[in-house]
Every structure is written in structure tokens, then in C-alpha cells.
Length: 164
Image 1 (cartoon, helix red, strand yellow):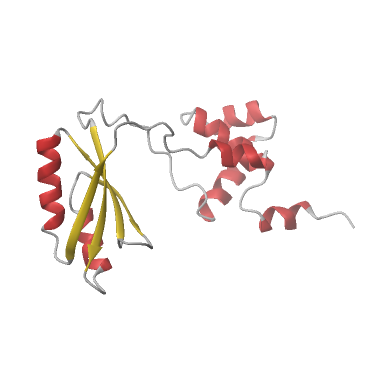
Image 2 (spheres, one colour):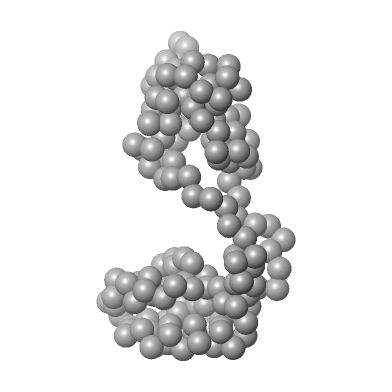
């Protein structure tokens, strides 16, 4: 019995057309709906409906510009593993969010509780950022590693290409 495309689409996070649309927008985020429809060979309404559905399902969360933080003066990236007081994750996360140089925070398993990516302008500036993190109530211990290079930058292309 052949599968129903509507049911199949709703069971998958993205189907082949969604993946092609997302790849197109990954490569050229400034494209409009009309140009996307032209390049994909589908109706403009189809592209708009797909985008709306991807947003509603939380797959597509926005169109932020890709920024080179080094070009903005933040040439140093570091990762910190934080050990925090029991039951204080929410409070610590709020404190970290108030530090401009904190780019992302992940709750983790393993020896630490939170994994934090930070940027800084220099080693001295990194020390200032670390001191700010340590001053957040609930942070008990911090271990930092400086990134020397980024051989594999953040990416989603392979996941999308796998669907297509």
C-alpha cells in the first residue's frame, strides 16, 4: 500500500522539498519567497505554506545574519565547563545571559553542568569575562579551553542534504 504524502510529511521533521528550501535559504538567506519558488520550480504559495509550517513546528527559528565575530573584534573563542550549585541552573543561566560575551549555554551530562561558548577581544578580556562568569551566583567552578581554530564550523547542510 503506497504511503500518503501528507501523512508522511507530518511524521517527518522535514521532507525533500522542505530540505531543498532550507538548503536554498542556508546558501542565500536574503532570497524572497517568489525567487525561492522560481528556483525550486513550485508555486509561490507552496513555498510560503512550507515556510509557515516550518516556523510553526519550530524547525525554522529565524533568519539571523551570519556574523564573523573576529571581524567584529572578538577574535578569541573559548569554551567553559561550569559546575553549579544543585538546583540553580535557571538562576545561573539567567546570570550568564546577562553577560554580553556569552554566546550560548548548554546543560550537559558528564563532569560539568553547563557548557558555555564565550568570545573575547584578547586574553585579558577573556579573563574579565571569566571573572564575570565566576561572579554569577551559583557558579562553583569553571574550567576554560581556548579554541585555536574551527576546522568544522556550525553547520546543518549535511543533515538537510541527507533528506534530499
